[in-house]
Structures are given as C-alpha cells and as structure tokens.
Length: 356
Image (tube, rainbow, N blue to C red; front, top):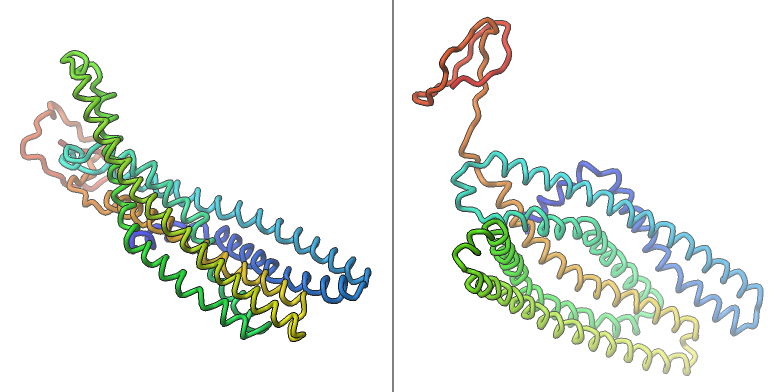
C-alpha cells in the first residue's frame, strides 16, 4: 500500500487541477444530499396540500439542482482525468529513464514482456485509480457521513435500523479484500508472463520456424494463457459471491425501513414525504458502500500495479557515467584502449567530454 501512496505523489505537480476536481466533487455531493428535501416539500406541501405554486417552485428547484450537479460532474471528470493523465505521463517517463540507465546484467535477467506490461498495463491501472478511484473513494466517505447524519436527524429510530446493515456489509468487503485482494498481483504477474512468451516468439519467429518448434511454442503459450485464465476466474468467483451477498443484505435493510416507516406513516408520526426522503437518503447511504466495494477492488489492483512499477524505479543503478572536463586545445590521438580507464578533471576553458 505504501507504493500506491508514492504513486499518488505524482499528482502534486497537478495540485491545482486535482483541487478543482475535489471541490467539484463536494458540490456534486451537496446537491445530491439536497434533492430529497425538495422531494419532501413537493409531496407534503405541494401534492398532499394540492398547492400548485409549491409544486412549480420545487420543480424549478429540482431542475436547478440537476443543472448544477451535471455541470460540476463534468468538471470533476475532466479535471480528474487531466491530472491522472499527467501523472501517468510522468510515471512512464520515470520508468523508461530508469530502464535506460540500468545495467546490462539487469536486462539480462529481466523479461521484456514483464517490463512492457509494467510500463503499459500497470501504469494504466494506477492511472485509473488516481484519476477516478481516489475521488470515488472520497465521494463515498463524504456521502456516507452526510447521509447517516441526515438520517439520524430525520428519524433516529429508523436510522438505527438502517445503520445496522453497514457493519455486515463492511465485513463482507473486508473478507473480499483479504482473500481476493492478493490475487490481483498474481494476475498482473501472469499477464506479464504471457506477454513475455508472446514477445519472445515474435522476436525469434525465424528461429522457431527454422527448427520447427511451432508445436512446442504453441503449447508454451497455451499453458501461460490457461494459467492467466484460471487466476482471473478465481478473482471472478470471489467477486460474484461478494456483491450478490451485499445486495441481499442491503435489500433486507430497505425492507425493514419501509416496513417500520409505513407503520409510522399509518400512525401519523411520519409523513409520506418524510418517508420518501428517508428512503432516498437510505439509497445514498447504501450507494457509498457499493462504491467502496468497487473502489476496494480497484485499490487492490492499483496497489499491486504500483508495487510492480516501483520495483523498476527503485532498482539501483550499477553503471555510473563520469563526465570529465578537458581543455579545448588538448588533442587525443589513438585513444581506443579500454584498459585502466580513469576519470579526471582538468581546469581551463573547457567543454564536457568523456575520456576513455
């Protein structure tokens, strides 16, 4: 996870755009939380009271809220993508620069397919999280706190019933994170292995054909592909089990709220508009939980990819280039021996050269 935090530091260069995206997110969240109050007014004071002026004003208010929400949704998406694309650009340059300066011994051991996967697929996975995932995570936290607060203010008894399902859902997500999360790194590793087999075959296709090794190479590629398939299916099985269970728990909470809220409406302690607004806030309470679930999946993938990226960036450079200075008038003849190479500095009007 520390590697993912290091990846997020690439956004510091684009702090203005990132801040604009975050402020846009807060405005979008505020408009979402304000909409159910307008629904409550249009039902209780407009439809129930048969007051057309209230219906007209609240309808215009809902239209204005929708315009503001959609406008800032655009700025949030655009600015977050712009910042993440810039961060990905810097990460790719950092990886390539490090690869250019690493020693021959490193490249002898490293697999080209693995390196290509890290520069392309892993960087894109981290970019997707830094662009949209981190904002969705913040949105879920703000929406969760705001919805829970309004629910408690509106009707604390119903709110407690609704909040009982949150620990159960978070427990399912925690199980998913601990059991399925580590598999995302394995998936990326197996994808790199598949790319390595493909790259080696394309680069050496003449050798393969010359020695009639097509059946062997096909079997080799098929085994790597099957290994990736099985690992992806394991992740899909975990995801397919997790999310239906979460939806089932959330539906139980909604059913309990409608049942108890309906009794309060019949008893006269709760209006229909308040019940509609309450169920809307309940959906806002559950939506962040679902967002957290999908974000946790993206978080696990991004953490695995960030670890693979910084494995390259943190690799120590074993070859050092020494730039020395020589006086312009100095001429070097027959300089072609590499024995006993040394670097030194000569004072004077000079330009940088490399002495061998």
